[in-house]
Amino acid sequence: MNKDIYTKPFFLTNPITVLVLGICSSLAVTVQLKGALVMALSVTIVTACSSLILSLLRNTIPNRVRIIVQLVVVAMFVILIDQFLQAFAYDTSKMLSVYIGLIITNCIIMGRIEAFALGNKPWPSFVDGACNGLGYGMILIIVAFFRELLGSGTLFGFQVIPASWYMENGGWYMNNGLMILPPMALILLGCVVWIQRSIQKELQEK
Amino acid sequence: MNTNSNVYTVIYTTILVVIVAAILAFAASALKSRQQANADLAKMKTIMMAANMGQNPDGSVDKSADFMKLYNDHITNAFVVDAEGNVVEGVDAFKDIDLKSQFSALKKGQEVKLPVYECTMDDGRKVNILAMYGAGLWGAIWGYVAVEDDNETVAGAIFDHASETPGLGAKIAEPPFYTQFRGKKLSDAGQFSSVKVIKGGANGSENGVDAISGATMTSKAVSASLEQWLGAYKAFLTGRPAAKECCGACEGDSEKECCCSENCEGECDNEPVNTEKDE
Image (tube, rainbow over the protein chains, first blue to last red):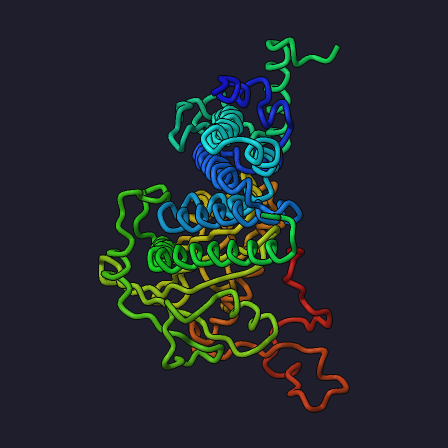
């Protein structure tokens, strides 16, 4: 199998920073690392599994209803994830609320199925889906790390900025309220794109 | 085989949808009891938190607390009352009352069923835990208020929300806001009154708490919902029926009982109070 399948989704064709897909959810669920991590895993499972199933079915799918068949399979996985979270991770499921259900509208999933899974064998499709999900998740975690650290002073809910630094305790530090709001996620995302493009020169337009 | 023929397409999609439906139906029914248990536990947690149980001294959640045990040990009675303060028989306060539908009944002035949880504290004192539900800025807000057995002093309160702005309105669910309610009075100069959320600071007022700066709409919504629900509970708390809905409707409508002169509190306001925000 071509090793590009493993590496490209993380850098050269990263779904968020290069293809600019899945922006909406990356703004919504990156307030806390925990939410971002669960979202990243959910999207990875959905892209990987639906790519696998649709790649297995690829020679039987009637071409005219192709998109609908894809949607049915993707929706099934999304609902299963939602049900499992409600049963086994109730607090996280409450926190992510509608965004788990909205995974189905994440363009990365349909994009990878259309562009890759329908024309390739099951195993490469599975890997491609998983790596794209993880590439998406990687950016989510980076953004969530800075938003949670600077916006709430915590990481995964644990206080990392010493309590004595805070102004209300007589210190000099204050959490940045803007970090908690979605616009700051977009600005951080822009910074990530900027850094990536300045390192990977081949992404720069001539 | 021709995968583009109509017959093939119809049969293919039918089989696919049936399989998917079967998988989903199986998953949903297999996980239902667990999900319900989670939802119940979350509700028990909010109820107990209102009575200041399962909390650290600063009011934050004690993560080691077993809320189901706390609930079963301390909630000695749960019942449902109506707006006249009478107990409604045959209704389970915990399972049967959906606060959202009671909220819409309350708004329309229909008959409401209000849950009351009687909680026996460690020192033997009894407090009544009352429910609240309303429309916040972006979505629903709800909470519980615990009232001491003098029916006047607030023992504690807790709020939660569906989608208030993180860092602003969402602070209603954080200890610095809800711990302010402890010890507040449900009275103002001898008259029954709800606890008010006051913009600009309550300044030690007996029945007021500080609003959250930057979250005026959510603060107002908490204040309005408390007023609405505690108003409905008034008969239960004070033993006196609540003032009837006033008042402009009397004019030209002889069918309706005119209440302006008798039971009405305060100024009549002809404009309907619109508690529903854009949702």
